[in-house]
Amino acid sequence: MVSKEKIAARFRQLQDDICQALEQADGGGIFIEDNWTRPEGGGGRSRVLEGNTIEKGGVMFSAVHGPLPEITAKAMNLAPTDFFATGVSIVLHPHSPMAPIIHMNVRYFETSGGERWWFGGGIDLTPHYVVPEDARFFHEQLKNTCDKFAPHFYPEFKKHADDYFFIRHRKETRGIGGIFYDYLDDKTGFTQEQLFDFSIAVGETFAPTYTELLQRAVARSFGEAEKRWQMLRRGRYVEFNLVWDRGTKFGLETNGRKESILMSMPPTAQWAYNHQPEPGTAEAETLGWLRKGVEWI
Amino acid sequence: MVSKEKIAARFRQLQDDICQALEQADGGGIFIEDNWTRPEGGGGRSRVLEGNTIEKGGVMFSAVHGPLPEITAKAMNLAPTDFFATGVSIVLHPHSPMAPIIHMNVRYFETSGGERWWFGGGIDLTPHYVVPEDARFFHEQLKNTCDKFAPHFYPEFKKHADDYFFIRHRKETRGIGGIFYDYLDDKTGFTQEQLFDFSIAVGETFAPTYTELLQRAVARSFGEAEKRWQMLRRGRYVEFNLVWDRGTKFGLETNGRKESILMSMPPTAQWAYNHQPEPGTAEAETLGWLRKGVEWI
Image 1 (cartoon, rainbow over the protein chains, first blue to last red):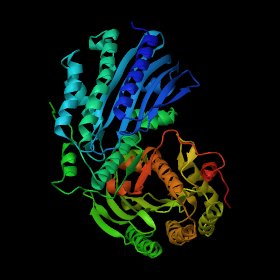
Image 2: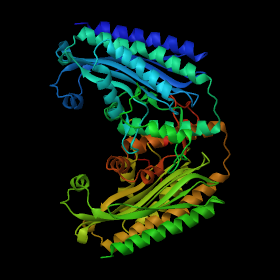
Image 3: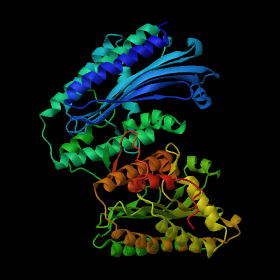
Image 4: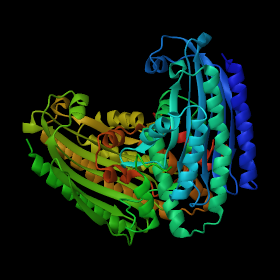
């Protein structure tokens, strides 16, 4: 078994590496750090950025422990126990509507003494305008990482992302998906060390993939119409996160650290009554892509 | 018993009267009408406004019927039955941060044959900046209306509003409350006709009260700082509605008409990481008022 301290330290390093890569890509923005502790045990290191390329971004590390809240134990089908959980969570909202919103999370959970443990996480992309070659590139990067571990990882985790990042009341996906996995433990046939390596590999896929996507977006011009569409899509992002995201709901209902949970909120968002893009426009084309089961590769 | 048709017709009239009063107060904006039908029975008349004073507003009437969805029957502790429901729902977001957001709802529900019936509704106010004399005026109007029916209505329904319009994860109320009531039936000691009269009285309190508040706000100047605060407060409004409002959650989870449900969303909203107003500012003062149990009268 890899110790929980080692996993937490590696996740913390991942936060450092990603922040450094993002500052470089942003071209001017600097992360501001906010350290916090949790009365019941542990704490976190939040880093937030208001940059030149990234309008609002958060790269959050936490490692918390203590008695597992009763409601959580119940939801997870566990007897009363102490727990330890550590992870890195990222949401980045770029200035340009031509660049995508991205979300990443890698996390590890274990009960007292390590009787039960698992990894969860994933990366998914929410372009305001879907560019099929970018979507393909994004999914290829994820598939490459997954394929180093098992051929069934990508198709399985890609389907999970499609199913999870779905705005049910809009009948549209939040974006073009990615990968999402949870409760990866020894029942997968992999050891804890192998699944830890997989989590780190996912984490290390994040920065080069997103900075490439930002780079591609630089050349794409936009005006008021594209900004307006970005604001409406950010509204949808809010709807997904506040209405359907299990982590957000659970965190808010169980008195989690609200600033960490809500760092995913966009800097600005808009809503219009019954907005429908004109057929044949780039906006309508994007909506056409926001469905489950698109095979980008 | 007042027939459900008569109640629906009166609510429809209320929508007309309120829209007319709001157009006059807005000074230029005209409501756009959107009629819709529900496959299972009934429909609605949605009216939305993008005006000079009101940036985004909706005044929605609906009268729907059909088999009561199983999940609803269960939640309401009813055997399978047909139902009829009619109501008027309003949310108005003004341009000026010095004017308040307002919400009103009056509704009537009955099961097939009228075996069970009840009224629900209320009016509550969400100022971006709390002005105590406006808050007092607002609560006085509501109390006057309540007092015509029973002395315990105002204190009881005021407390319900405080408890209901509470953003639990922020530990702050959505605004300065108002009145909120639900399941008013003959167990209250009042007849269906009397409670219908009360609902209409609440509905008729809306327009004169809100137009007076708009009028008072005209003279108050504001700049970028106040607009910024308004955007952040609108973000809180979104958080309440999407995370905590039972009607919104229920509607979205049961495939209700999403455009009617989400008409309450502000035209624009903003989020900032861990935003805290400076002590002693008007913004900090407003936050100080956003708690339960303030006696405005």
